[in-house]
Length: 334
Figure 1 (cartoon, helix red, strand yellow):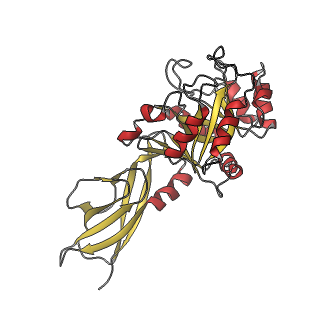
Figure 2 (tube, one colour):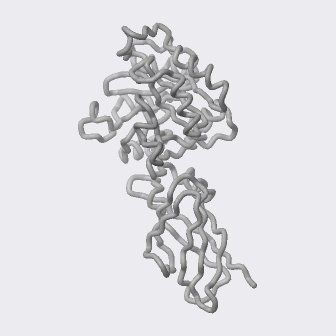
Figure 3 (spheres, rainbow, N blue to C red):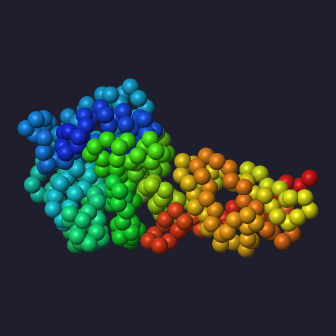
């Protein structure tokens, strides 16, 4: 499920009406979104009074009925660091979260069935060094089951430190657009760009199934051309995206022509770390999205089968660590 769970409209500090967010999501092929308006920060209040913090969700949900789009009820809890900003999604009543005590806000969100994640922990307005840092308060929130995830990607920033926090604390890896203006302009959609999203491995196409997958930490973030997630989630995604569709030897030679199909929307950057070298390229191969790429492999002799072993350079499982990926190549016998 392709999801963006950090979005703003004019009902907080965004620049568009909620229906525009629905239309953008449909155009982008998303499965689920959440309009996470700031509870405490309402800069357009004089022009658009907003006494009901549920209104943005209600407007978006009404239009979404005409499309195959899930709108999850959410808000942004806006506080100084610590704990900083956090999104609470899958809530039922945003008005009940208008509380002064930070911890009590988290508790109320949880009482409503909320999934809570730490927003932009590397935000230089709150962390001048740009490094996400786990404080004692965050450790308490995690320990008490009040903090479920962390944004490793927010808008146009990526945080190795946030990824390490997610891995060390066993919380969910999240990536969001945090969009305030137009998605098309911000992320150059017309030129082939895309917003950062969270890929959620849900068992069914329902809000309840998405929530279950988030709680179970079954996510991968897609940011620019990076895929970021735990190895247990990234590996099946890569396995499903890349496959051998044809292989043959050139006459009596021992150079095998291996046709690799990439059926995903991401371009994969593969570094050869296996036993064989290539005939027409060096050790780095690019597999463009939805294309078949031919790799010529020097196997030394004509084999009935062999393995290709790659490091997927744009698949990140931990800071400075990339997914290792093996492909079995079976040569048809004539």
